[in-house]
Image (cartoon, rainbow, N blue to C red; front, side, top):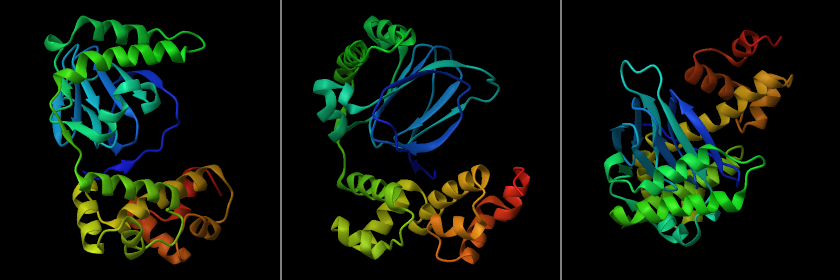
Length: 263
């Protein structure tokens, strides 16, 4: 499962999820998935769970997770709340330092306060009231965290998190695994192994994916030359850019741009 790091704004978002299909990713916020109807599949912490009505997935910061649909399910409503740790009050430390043995709680074991809190979040005030949202988030956590078996996040988990945070900010630079290993105080071998096992791909492939995602946006939304885009995204040469783009997306940057209506 190839995961990517998602940088999120420091604000809470609450949205209805209908037939959500989102690839493996992780970020530094708490994510809460509350199923209104059955039909979604949630993968988190290496486990896949079919979500029934009223079930909850409480996904801690830094945990790789993904969403999909069960076979034959066309639509399934859920509430998805992405919460900065600044909203979690006294629960911030365990959320940052621990992870649950399983992030899933079934409807039958949840306190009625949890449904009340989510239904209240479902009806946001205009403009949103941050204080009320914080109180509702902390009510949910007060009723769910005591039910979970928590364990300390491993040192390897911390290394991967630090690594992808650096890459999300510096992927346009000419980075090397050797230089990153020195910055993180671990061996190159350890860094390569941990990154590959946790993220599901090697260091060069992950960096290229970040650069190519940037390149896709520039090809679609700007009139910059392909050569300039290649350098802006961190590729050493346009030839390297073309080869990586074609390998990943099945066509050249020029073909991609023309297909999007850019001449």
